[in-house]
Length: 371
Image 1: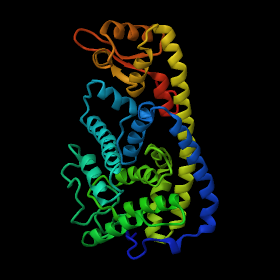
Image 2: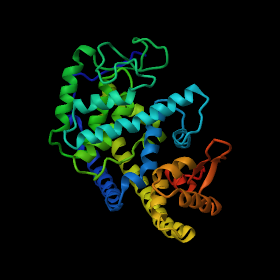
Image 3: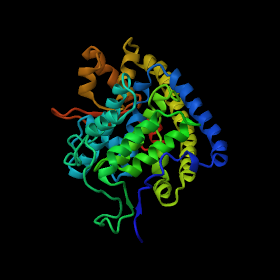
Image 4: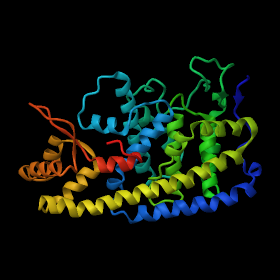
């Protein structure tokens, strides 16, 4: 079967969208997103409390591209757990870069509009020091690329993006569309994501970067109060439909079908994000009382905040970096372990520090009991 080629001359697609199909889906998606954002705005420190969800988004977005590392493995590595497998270590570094790239883009967006400049810089961070570091980080490709089974040629590929000689103009058009007034912002986000993936402007990292752009766009356009909307779980759970929907844009001009899939994904993930954010907030409020009662320390909330931000950590890091006097810090850890709030991932011994986890929080992030 011949490859599908980029839909040249058919972007932006407003005239090709069937609003009769999309309008009934927009309301429920917007309402679900607003409910989630209401909780997000009410959380006193979302960067701290929702950090496990941020880590999970990086894991799942990277998993769509083939990585196998779990959130537990990433956090254990960051806590000092040795990783013997080179493949797993590479997976973990890519996931960590995803979070770093998201953070860099968020920082830039505080003073700049969403633009090619931010896309390039996020891409540079995303590929820094990992498997794609030799694929021109931060620079648009100057050669053809294609998508298909491993080892396929351009003639046997599934999809062939726009030619490199036309890429600069196409990305300029994509940037202009970011700032256009359109009938609906969620549909605009869907179109932006699909067009970015179809252009495939970089030699590597396009999928992860394209998914990263979804919450950044929603945040900049005021649909969410923080760029903390996690949609990759839906795309990963419906991976075949995700790729088929993107492919159908170029193959069949089916922008409406893609936008329908995207809107449903926003609704489902907003509801899932809402449930997890509420569960995390409830856990935090209950743990504030319990940890204070157990430890009888005025450092109880400070210790809890530190653990929420790092639900897998080494005991030596807690003692040395949590800002708590050492004797108190050691006693707090002992009490939390004895009460089974914390679990031992790796026992300490000799000069090796113990690695501890906070299972209740990790299980909320995973959506099931794994720890």
